Amino acid sequence: MSPHLPPVSPAVTAQLVAALSPRLRKRLDAGVAKIGGRPVVREGDVVRVAVDDDTDLELHAPGGVVTRAEAIRCGCLLAPDCLHRAAAASAAPVADPAESPESAPPSAPSPAAATGPAPAGGPVPASATPAQRAAAVALRDAAAAVLEAGIDGAGAVLQAELLRAAHTARLAGLPRAAGRAVAVVTALRAARGADPAHRLSDLTAALRDVLFLAHRLPDATGPELAALCGRVRQPYTPDGSLRLYGLFAEPVLTTTGYAGTVTWTCDASGRLCTVPDVAPGGADRAMGSADRAVRVGDTALTPRELSRAGLAVSGATVSPTGRLGAGAGVRAVRASGASWHAEPLDRLWAVPVAEQVGRALAGDVGLPSADDAAVRKPGDDRDGQDLLFLDITVVGTVQEAAGACLLADCDGLAVRLAAAHDDPALPHRENLRLLALLASARGTRLRVVARLTPAPLPRALLLAASHPTDPDAHVDLGLDRLRRADLPATPAPGTAPGARSAPVAQPASAADEAPVHLLRRRVHQAVSGGRRVLAFPGSRESEAARLRRCGLGTAGELLAELHDTAAQRARDPFGRLLPADTGRFARAWLGAALYTEEVDRALCAAAWGVGLPEPAPADRTRTGPGPAIAPPGRDGSP
Image (cartoon, rainbow, N blue to C red; front, top):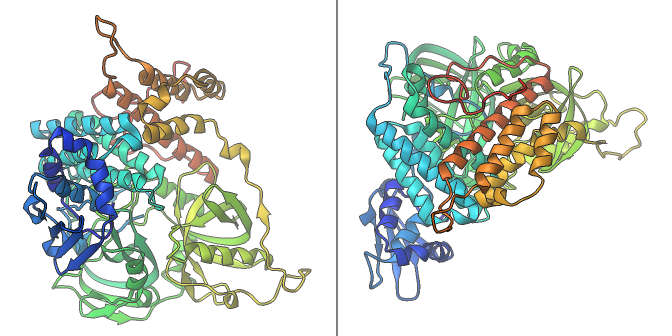
């Protein structure tokens, strides 16, 4: 995927690829790679790609998005039936036609309140329409084909089929499923392009969401169907007058080509509201937007200023996820801010940690909303349910696969605090490294804001922290850069002068090697390598037996079923192999993926010492008509 090309509507890409002959389809992936490496020149709304010395390709993007197939023009002799137009559309980022870049909501890990049941008084659909059922079937078949092929096999043709299914789903009134399908294509392109921002877990989550929605939609009714359908735009409701206090700001940088800053504020009752500034761009925009003024009513403040100041708003409008509207009727003036240790912000840290974690897990971590379609990462949320407000003492660092993270004491609980983003343009990891030096200054207390990540150990992503030497100030760890001069100058008693290295803690291998990782690994392998990877003979029986011995009977059955469906191939009367049953394999994989997600939530709750929240009304494994995905084990185990 080339970030220099303008976003292209999914319908345009699907139309151009479908028009290719079978011979040209075989050459499409090579054409995409060629287009991605050619020089690009932008002149206003026109982007020109030099295909070769004699041929130019033009993409006309009024408003920044290519919305018609005729807007991609090629100067070669075979145009308009040439390969270049389809290759350019397949190499460009995927646009979401339902959301303008300025109004798109930002990204972060957890549930989505924006796609809950229809609002009170609104119409609740009784059952799925025939068009929605057909769209769900198309999504299921396209996603199953991607799962069958794996990353290496899911080229531009399969991606176009999934984009066509996403476009059909959006026309049928299924924006949630359409947005997740677009997220799958975006993650596939990042994986195939060796994008450093690619995460296999993100692709797995997006593919799981598409298959789950396609599985549940035909049989869902009432509020569950409304939640599964989602909505294209967030509704804003009047909220009268608000007195807001800046809390912190965080950068947004997504794999879908959007970047910016989200500023978090808190009203007098402790409710969180956000002021986003997100638009197409990269890491430079994510950092630069911190000093770019955002207008709210009559006032213009930069996110860096707003996170430390306040706002007095009249005629306010707020979305269900807490996003503050900026309509013509909104009036706002700058006001004084508040320290994290003063009211009303102090009450955020007064909530017990167990209650905060329970609130985050109760939000049904995992399946994002339709509003995630354009700019949210898989599994992100911005309503603040997954934010943790912790008082900690840094005690050292611990090594993980993705790098070092802080090890902190939080009321006697050892919590791992990892960098929220690994992009080198953002200062997250550099600030984390400097904060680790506080372990040498014994007893240094910090107030931090972090985002919960379900894991077998207490773990969260660090977003902001109080200043190490000025408790009344705070540091936005994704925007501000700490320096050694910001750390306490006096070493701890008994510490040699200049000794600044932080203790390194050994990881708890017993928890890291929880038996469920055997099933999770196979789930990820299927996404990466396709069905054939799980069809090879190996240690499948020993792994399933180990899961059963550890009391995870359902996990053992799901793993055995996953291997069986991957290896099973029928033959015709002449002994020739028939095509694999991709639908059955997709169902088995979906059951395993959903099971590991629920086990992760249970392990996370146990690690933080809280009870597992009750399932949401639309429980994804057992609620509503239709077969359950992950039945209990025969021995009654989880």
